[in-house]
Length: 608
Image 1: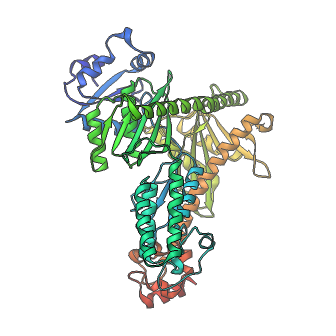
Image 2: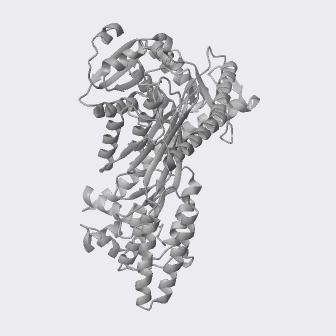
Image 3: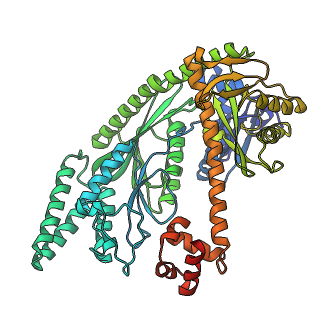
């Protein structure tokens, strides 16, 4: 690889992405530039003008490479891809382990339902959010259902088979399409109005409802007209409570940053229909060398990739480095023009100030809570180091557990804790290949052999490419000895301790094959080891249950003559599970595409 000096000499005057690596060849920074030559050289010139973060970055750079792109827009996309792949130390990283709740409206179904979800998928449904607090989602759904009584259940609704309405119908939170109390067309209108309401288009909803109320009055259906009138009144009351920021029915996100020496916080205010309807905040840990314009640009790209609902206008506190390219990228993603602007005065500027204040509050809260928790974790690790007489504090811990169903679904888990916090992205699970009978010691050995062979074969990733400071295995002295045997054979020297349980299946001591340490002496260490052990057990059991469920589904349906992959898929899609299929009658099964009465009768008979 060329030296940094040679690379700087040959930099082209073209757009592209540059990649900086440290002495271990680990990617520590990825950036994009309109003109590579100018941007990259600026890092290595005028040393006296560097801020502390840039100085720290540059001092760590040992090699440099670049990728030329055709346009600045392409460079933006490539930069984001590489940041996600390498997770560089000095880049803006949307470190958000929480998956925020959304409201999901299943408009792809004949009788849509509303529900809470933490996963946004391309399944034809409409998603609304995001919401920061689960309580806010539940409140929104309760208000929505009082205004528009949409179902939340997963009942299979058929016009040929009426069902008894549930309690929600009797308390006015469902219109009971399952009982045939509302037509498909009228229910569809409810859903349309509910979607408009969730989108913040309250005035559109009110106009539709006023038209519906007049029509019902003209038809002398006064009771139904009165119900619609009450719905309009409720919406108007709710509408008055929201802050008005425009009379132009604007659809806008307002984004601002706030920073201290090492971290940024970002806050997004959502304005829909001219009213402020929600807020979401992030903390961007360890921003490193990022300038404000670079930080806000990288944040926006990552944010709208995870949140596909892009508004018509985005108001920013700081001008991003590539305003035009960013606007083009977002417009392409939305499917229509997205305006990106930096307001200097008026209502939009006032909202920017509000967003900045929210970002400041978020960062202060983070420093009080999260950083305090991290400090506590580091202190616990230092105490653990002293207790186990380790050479250094175990900043990276790998914990292993085995789970099986007799001689089937023999699996194991590897969970990773970094600086005392669970690193969910580094979790891995293993399905045994060599072990075919119940053998916990053999399963543990196969797991460790596969994991550390990956390390010895030169894996470059952060999971398998580095050794942990400490290995914890679920079990006693024999489990520890089995693990040590593998490490010894591989020529690796990593401390191994076993997490032993008492009769009540609680962590109570650590063992290393020759000695044991009671954990009751220190409550912090006890809580930490219990958390690690529970997480390793949960992750292994989750995988075991998943495989067992697949086996059960496979064995029950695949044994039925005439059921191939296509029909099996149709049945599970129609009923959701084998359990629900068992509960269905022959007529319901026969209505599924490709089944028919004769095969349905056979299915019902076999599943009994």
